[in-house]
Length: 80
Image 1: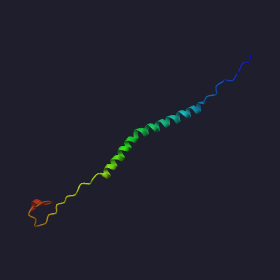
Image 2: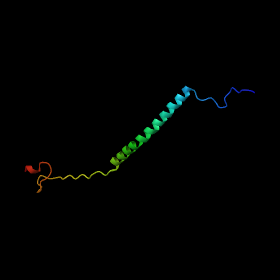
Image 3: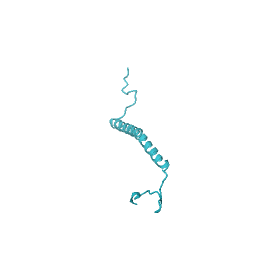
Image 4: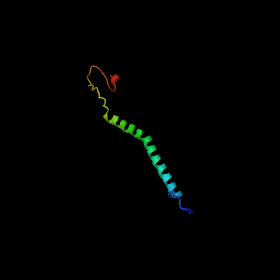
């Protein structure tokens, strides 16, 4: 009867390799999670900037009054 001293399964990771794998996995998780949290805020900011650029400008209505105008208006209208 012979005794086999070797295991049939391959050797596992070392403690250092397992620790590095855990840190890399956590870093990937944090990057993806933060990206999903920040992406909607970035999208809203871009949409707001597009709104500011694309919105119609209000028409300027300036009333020009001459000195001999029968209806006073504008700055200093009540000083005559």
